[in-house]
Image (cartoon, rainbow, N blue to C red):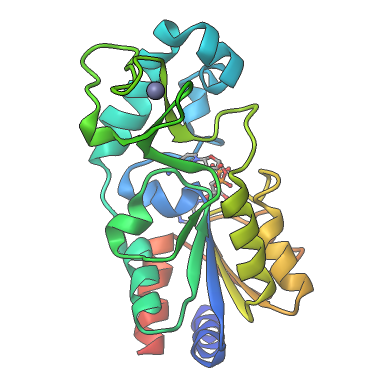
Length: 248
Ligand code: NAD
Ligand code: ZN
């Protein structure tokens, strides 16, 4: 057996034996679905200015911000489909081997893959919220032909329902993630640099409560030499496929 096969075997055994496991995902799990991460080579911030996602800028300049937001999050993200890594997590949940997924992603791909308990730390771009009356809408019910889109209930400005810079983490998601982390015996981290606070604390909380940390990433992250017990280097979909083949 190669070292990699041995590590995958160890990870598979841990996930099969653990009474309560969770996944923690970042932009890397969606790269093979065609969505680039924010940082690094080919990242979205090499092409776009992150200032468009600053809440104060957005409120003062919705006409400037919207064409860029539409291009990234609706024309582009809208075409993405879940890959083997998303599908694998949904399968583990169906088999009773995963209690839930805490994701930093806003692309809805875990839900599209069939995951049920998805805790969205940073919101979801498939919904819009009214900045005035707080009504929430499915994007499919909002026309983006005229920008910026306005609230069907009160005509005020709508905002994609994910966290902009300067916004707080949704309290329910924050609480639920911490609780899941405290009660997990194993955490599968997939495709996160671990540099975004406070989301990056979730696997650390689990580790402090005794969880074994399994990490899948193409490159070492801030977790790798810190809390990770088993590091599986490679693309999320390829490692997930091997992991599932070893488990079942
Ligand atoms: P990040 O962009 O900072 O880093 C991505 C990580 O994924 C890196 O560690 C990289 O090595 C790894 N990676 C790249 N390709 C991979 C692959 N094929 N398989 C496995 N790993 C791979 O991501 P982050 O830590 O999640 O933080 C960025 C923030 O940006 C998050 O808040 C997230 O919400 C947001 N974001 C979301 C999306 C999305 O919804 N798909 C896309 C871009 C950014
Ligand atoms: Zn409204």
